[in-house]
Image 1 (cartoon, helix red, strand yellow):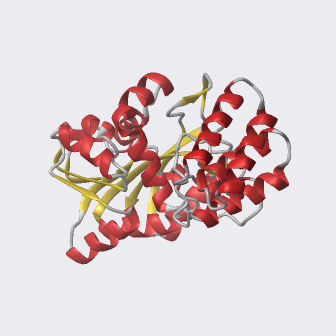
Image 2 (cartoon, rainbow, N blue to C red; image 1 turned 180 degrees about the vertical axis):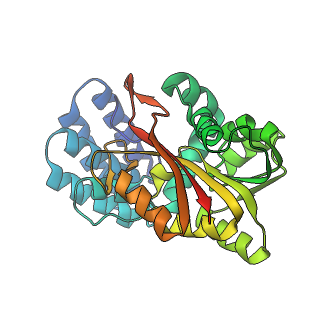
Length: 308
C-alpha cells in the first residue's frame, strides 16, 4: 500500500510540488529513503507544506523512525491547523499525545473525498453489513416493530436509511459530510437531512422538542473516542420507551483504543458504562462484525438500549 497521503494540499510552489510528485513515484517503486529525501527538499523550499510534512511522517514510520515521524506529524498539524490530513490521529496512535476527539474537518474531508464511490467500495470491498446487523438486533429486541420517527446518526449516503425506511413513518438523517448528505438526498428516502456535527445536532433537536422512537448509528462511532456524551445526547431526544441501536468496533479490553486504521475500538465495558450513565436500559449487547479488512472480519458489537 502506498504510504503518501491521498489528500494533497499544494504548497503554492511549483518546484516543491514537483518534488512531492517525484517522492510519490519513488515510494511507489519501493525507494522509501529516496522519497523521504525528496520531501525534505520540498520542505526546504516551503517549510509550511502540510502535505509534505504528513507524507514524511508516514515514510519515517515505515522506515522505523517513530520519533522523527512524530515530529513530522506535529509539523503537519502546525502547517494546517484544521488538520485535514489527520496528523493528530497518528500522533495519538504513536502515543505522542493523549487520546482526544478526531478533528471534525479531517472527518468531513475524509468522507467528502470518498462520497462518490462510498457505497460501492464499502459494500463490495469491505462486505459492509451494519444496517442488516442493526435490523436483526432490533427485531430481537422488538420483533416486527414499526417506529413513528427515526433518526439516523452519521447517515452517510443513506445505506442504513434504505434498510429501515419501510419500518418507519418519518426518517431524519444527519452527517458531517456535505457530499455524503448530497448522495443520501438523491435516494429520496429521508424526510429531513442535515449537515452537522452529531452532538451539536442532537442538542438543537432537544431544544426544538423533537423526539424519536428510534435512533440508529451504523458504523459511526469508530470516529468518536468517548460514547458517554453521545449516549446522553441521544437519551435527551428519545421518546419514552424509545430505542437506541448502534454498532461499534471492539477489542478485548474494557476501554477505548485507536487502531492502526485510525478508527476507535470500544471495549464492552465502555459501551455498558456509557449507556448506564445516560440512564438507558441495555436490552442487548452482542458480538457482530459489520465489515472486513484485509479479508478478515473486524471484531464488533451491536447494542440496543431503551429509554427508561
